[in-house]
Length: 356
Image (cartoon, rainbow, N blue to C red; front, side, top):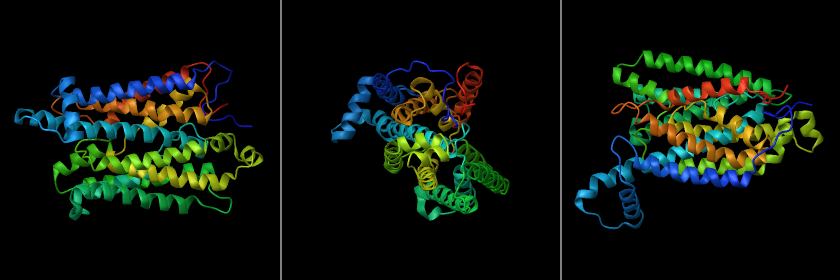
């Protein structure tokens, strides 16, 4: 019988989930406040609270407070909230993806969705596809690209035996290479240098230019996806142990895998459309959470979204403060953090990526 993804070789004590959830909830709230207050221009906490109250209640402010209010309410708050939503979403989809394909190296982008979104976004940035949609052009193009990639991967991976984990991984990887090649060709054909830079920046993930309109759609996708994964936690446990074990426990692995594929792809497409391709979060956070609470998906899914949200809020804060006035792509920092973490995990005794 295969071990669930990330299962330890020997029994070990696990921290209780409830205190950890409380701790991470407090950490997330503190992170949100710090993300709004800190930046190229720091805003005192009392002013953050005042501007937030004015934004919620519609209260009056002095004319001298207008620049600070715009920084807090119009620029930083939606960006910080979206960072938390994207971090949480990538983390829970990473957990589900690793159970879906029973592969410890799976992440939200293993199905080729991110690369498909990159084609749509690059076409929008470089050639103005869907330019008539204005501010929504990039997100719509990226989402449609993700939708197209999902359909192609599904059709290519489907067989008489259903969508087996190996076929999904191989098909998604192959399609990702193909879509990446298309994106590269589009970048090389760009008529303007600034479009090339914008496309490359988006391909590595960015929350620059986020508006309030981006937050509700991404948040709704994450909430619905998380709700489904949480309800399916026991079935995810069974699926992670192999199709034979899942069937013996009364779970239809083929049907569950199809549904997981659709939900993972839909949530990933929504997130990539607003944030670009932020790597390593969905790969790294599930393993770190399993180290703390074990491999049971009921416990992992209770902790992973909070941990992912805290992580990406701080990554975004670093991205916009390390090289002021420039801004770093999020993927650069998540990789800089994720690579050492994975090297440490591989060298750590007692932790096995995906079992023996």
